[in-house]
Amino acid sequence: MPETVLLVGGGGREHAIARALAGSDAALYACAGNRNPGIAALAEGFETLETTNPTAVVEYAEEVGATLAVVGPEGPLAAGVADALDDAGIYAFGPNAEEARIETDKAFQRRFMRERGIPGCPDFETFDDLDAACEYIDDYDGDLAVKPAGLTGGKGVRVIGDQVTKAEAKEYLRNSDYDRVVLEERLVGEEFTVQALVANGDLRVAPAVQDHKRAYEGDEGPNTGGMGSYSDSGLALPFMTDGDYREAVEVLEATVEALDGYKGVLYGQFMLTADGVKVVEFNARFGDPEAMNTLPVLNTDFLDVLVAAREGDSLPELSFSSKATVCKYAVPEGYPEDPKAGARVEISPENAGDALLFYASVDQREDGIYTTTSRAFAVVGVADTIAAAEEIAEDALAVAGEEGLDVRHDIGKADLVQKRIDHMDELRGE
Ligand code: AMP
Ligand code: GLY
Image (cartoon, rainbow, N blue to C red; front, top):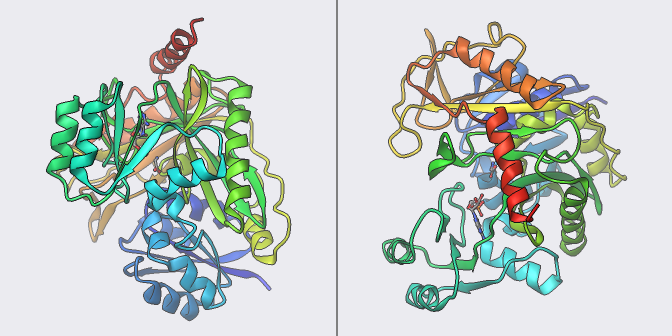
């Protein structure tokens, strides 16, 4: 019997998931808070609903006869959508709310690492009293990262010595309404992501990806959900060795072993430091943008992974094409602090050239597609080298034009890739 898959979520990541499933022997349905025209074009049905409402998602899943579900974003996972689907007899590839705490509760995540002896855990303390946290900042000899324990869309962290001073960090806490924060040792190095597909105690890893969180070129400006990302033709990135990549995979393996029963994507955000690989955070889902680097080069049928996960089987080994990828997001002008919506999106799958086009948050009107106040769309180049992939992405951005949009053109360019290599060489004293 062919499968019917419900995809939950309507961003660029979910468009990439939809594309990965589009070639499979499955009927695809999707639901999201926003209508994503890219997903809608690939799906047999698309329902606009509140994806953090488990009842609404289950109702739609039952209506379309879903036999499997993939939950894209963290919000629905935190709200128990995977639990509700599982309870309704629809296998959800995504952790239940309790397991998703590895992402949704940073205090839990750090304590879990410490208690279970997971390698790569920085020094940390957790606080539910903000005055005590401020005192700790005063007394701490060195720089700290200040992290609200709950979900903030990647925008809640302040790093002392990088983005803020000690005084600004304390002011940030005092002006916040956070009820729990984690203060941890500032990690210095280069960040990278490794995503793993996990079920039945098995773990299958993807090539490393580097995202760019800062809003503006040259890694300036406020943190965002991610402005773009690249991966190389092998498993590691140019600034790291295969040994560094393996060290990250070992952390993921130790985590999956300690989590017992986890299913879905486990995303490790790592900092490669002079002392090796450290964990910045875990996420309980694909990265956005990182899914757009990884899924287009996955040769294994993603549906086979989902079915094996549901059936309790061993997961298939993953095969990836030996291609580099560069993903660049186009965001509304002024994003993230003062985004201006309403620019017409001139790029479409028909005129994107060799690039893949993934829609994120856009508004589809009768006369065209327009930006909202969140990341609008991403273009992805896939080629033998990072440089060639970057050119493909840029050619597509030229079609999209610049009216009302901001893009970090530096992502994937030789200068920035080299800067990362030089940074690591310098830290390692080479
Ligand atoms: P998170 O929300 O945990 O992903 O953090 C957002 C960003 O803050 C990360 O991608 C890092 O760039 C930065 N960050 C988080 N924790 C640390 C840390 N301990 N040291 C340095 N930077 C950090
Ligand atoms: N790219 C960062 C994230 O998905 O959280």
